[in-house]
Length: 175
Image (cartoon, rainbow, N blue to C red; front, side, top):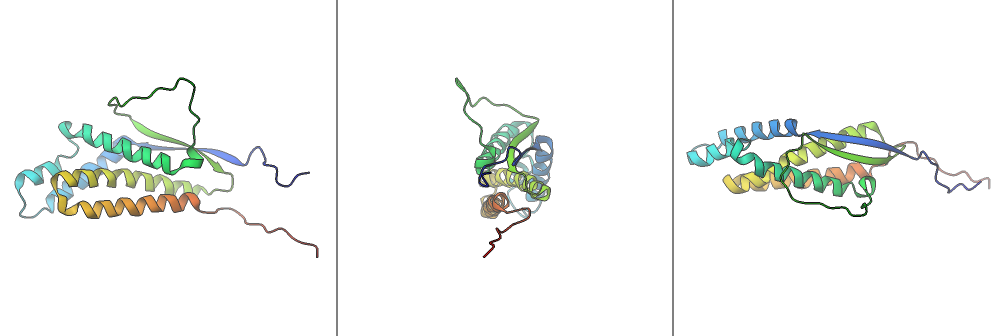
């Protein structure tokens, strides 16, 4: 018996779904608050900040959300790897997905609480990336704060993926 041979059921498939409407709801709320605290500011800038989720702006917001989610998928690298299919094609056509789905193959010992935390980090990362990009256009004074939040969340995603869960066993030696 080879003790180093991998068992067939060492991994579990995990599906994380980030609902677009929930991310948009939070972005709209934060945009309104961000605009509301722009005291004494130009009324047009304030209005642009609060209209982050309106029809004319949602296309750009969606593209930023797509990019942020793709970055999260890439960060999940070894767990989210998908082979390229023969003849695969891709394009940059605008689409408003109803949700963002990430399929992972996680070690069997990985914790459900780790997955829940990862899901929340991804959601927040997407929101903060949109806010960072949008404030760069309409309220540059707050961009650094949003960029810092993105960096912290990217690090938290990485730490959560690298966390060791489960029982750690040490080999026993008879002598």
